[in-house]
Image 1: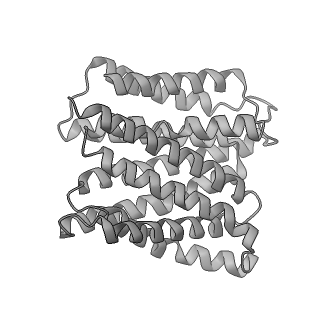
Image 2: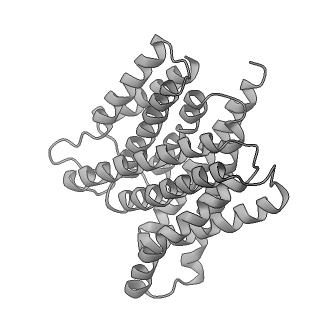
Length: 289
């Protein structure tokens, strides 16, 4: 119990890192092909992880650690692609929240399945999270958010679902890998994610050509922030249960949503506002359960 505050703090740091990274990359993806933004972000994450590995290698890799790390990389690659594409075609507020709530629910269910205890109030939190997804995804007739028509926002929500499921895999896999092997799980995962995204990057280069220095800047910043978040999350799993740490880390959409609201001036309709508040409440309830 004494170690839980450390895990909670690291989980919140991870949430801040992921949320800020997603916003920065989302802004970049509106001017630069998403596939290239994703490739640069993941490449920077891998380089960052490789440097950390030199100093934090733990007991060394095992087949299990490498396998879980590789699975986390698959989740990272497809989650990042889906999220950034969602940001490019829909409202950040909708896409980020839908992905974040699913990133809460799926690890919570898996955590219970592997033995984590979730009391009745925690179950209610998961149910509230599902309701929040429906509300935040509500488009209404003729409404616009950040210039996006209802159909575009629905498409964005679909990408949010894909991203949420993929990031859930990332969180679960890193937790299963554990912290005894130091930076190996994150480094292995980022290497795999880079390999997965290569075909998409090739397509992006053929369509867009090389990126300029200014086009590289934002994805690079996003990559550093995401790498810091990944290591914070991995460290946090050593101090608490998957249900709690994953839920706290999954508060990252709040950072993205607030930045989108005050920097990009995205507008929310009333069902979405209620959904955003409900999603935040559900995360807190599950974390305190």
